[in-house]
Length: 639
Image (tube, rainbow, N blue to C red; front, side, top):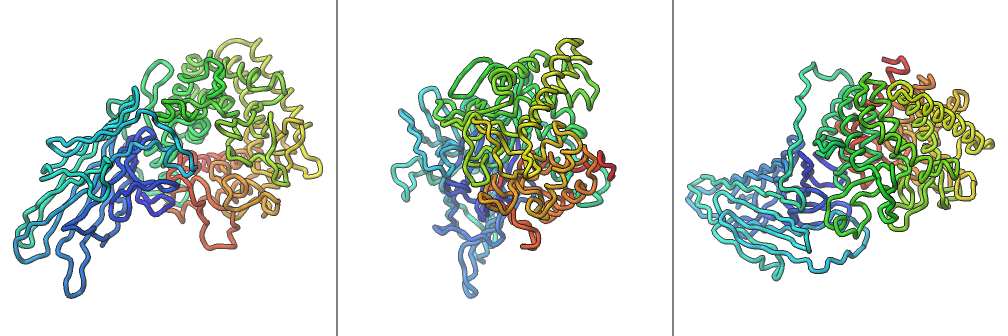
């Protein structure tokens, strides 16, 4: 698997590794860290091979033969007259908390020889948030690293108060010596060395196994694998994109705890930064998959209900009934140096939880899950009406969080919710698409109340609230001059007037009447919005537009998926086909994998879609997007 940078990426069972072209790890940080990662921590930060004192070059650079296995061919430096003395065949595989490596050293010499093989190894146990390029220095009072030799290799440990993580390296055969790294004295790095006897043109093998033992998890649980489809090969690019998307969702599936304590398998958000349960991401991924894999929705709903907010915690944003934004398992979250252990700073995860709960019932006809989660659904509605802001402000709102996220909708980067002059809106902010989600949540929960819970009085109340919200929204959000919805209302009730893709979500949620919805849908297909590949997050030509901005000019497949589902809902079949063609063309030029996000450059400007520099790969809701496109085509009568 090749990520957006030049690393090779392997993933399986909530564990991933990022390697350089030779299969090595040098301990990089920033936007492209390498290492072995599990539960938000790096369990291997150096893994550097030398043969007879020199680092071999990649004759065949490391490449992912499968999602979890890479192979490479290495040789020490040589010349035409003095060809390399050895060839190293390297195979590396990631599984649940483990990196295994098979090294086969082949002598190219006509006489017996003893080769010295050295492997420099270290585990820094760095938290993912430390590795990100944000220039923050996180204090770690009392932290200590330990390294000791074992019979089979070396053992690394990290302790800080009650926090204890370990990494073990086991070797067959065992290393001849284990010594401090002379190039990094005083560190925990160790050099494992072997003296390998090779016959004339003979070979020797090393088998190496790295086990990560993160804090709070005795061992990593493998996720049950799905059987590969045995149907005929995919017939077209959309089929292949769907097949790749399902495969990627499988790679991103992790184990969580359900509402009754049962283990459930849910989609994590993405690699490298987000291999964890996310409210919004996991909910929308599950929604896109619902017609094809309804069990994913049931698992996600159960996992999120299990950690639904119970009390008020200003630091984490927890509030009774609120659905979590993200969960983290790393050291910094454990010691509350970051707010993301369980961070609830999302305005939209709670209504999306309700949308998915009803959609699961609507799709499957099964009532058991809706019955099981009735009280969780009622608490989610209560949150929307109280802390969520509908009761006080008439809308779902959020205040920018100085310790967490400035914006708490899906466009959660600073500055994303902006006026046409580029100024960030100030709170309490009511973003447009969240009002659509809230409307849909009220309508759908009313149906559950009437059809499943047998509570018609509650259903009437929710229908009334939904109708009021819909009327109020059209009156206060619609920008008459632009003939388009505002991106948001700011804390003073002013229309945040940047033209943004969020308006397309309103077609999906149904908060707009058919006439206004069709006008929005057709507007989104004009060239300032539609690049030819996808609909941009912000229409080109506005002052804040930038094609390489995360949320102010880039294009996101999942954003487009929601828009396309909305286009189909309102009968805009030609627009459905146009956007689908663009996205499928992007996938086809990227081995049928849609990226998390791509640059906003027009299709006519380049022969290929321009990648966004820091895009996750794979990423869950992008992986599920082709399935949503297929659903939209069916709704629009195109397949």
